[in-house]
Length: 209
Image 1 (cartoon, helix red, strand yellow):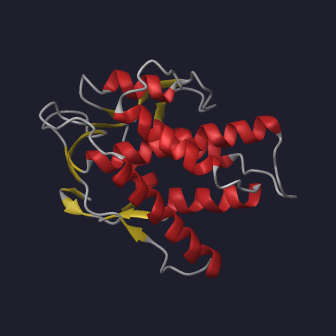
Image 2 (tube, rainbow, N blue to C red):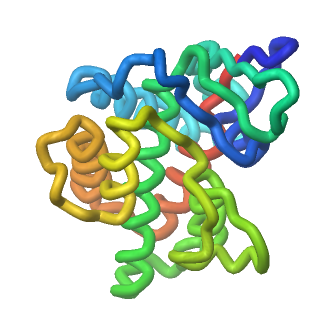
């Protein structure tokens, strides 16, 4: 990541560090498709296999590349522009949205699949990546003030509707990306313990530099 100086940081830490990340108007629209989504999910599966073999190893950290951020002069330094890396960050947030929905359904249906329960902190950690909260920090569904990412004026309505699970934009790549990750998760038939482990991989192991 570059913002005045290079810094190694997880995607989770990056998203929780700033109030909002904005994609400038001159940047292209969201354009990733199945090929890129599959590479994304394959990378997670690969990291997860490393974790299963040696949970205490640092060799399973995945460096997803460089994200370049920019702060406008004389403006809020908690709001930054994404100069490079918007496709990866948007995809990561759509994955998190799919994972959040998956966890909530499992918790509501009490489909534990093992003696352990799904760690409730996963829900709050993902919500803090997706939304900037103000006030009482309850992280309820409607307790956020704004999305952590602001896409361009064409993609933002699709993104917001997709996070709300509205299906009126089914033909957009943003909707299809979340659907891809939803199906990817459902096809795994995870136990609660596996959900907790996978959450750790997704939230902690994706590093930027």
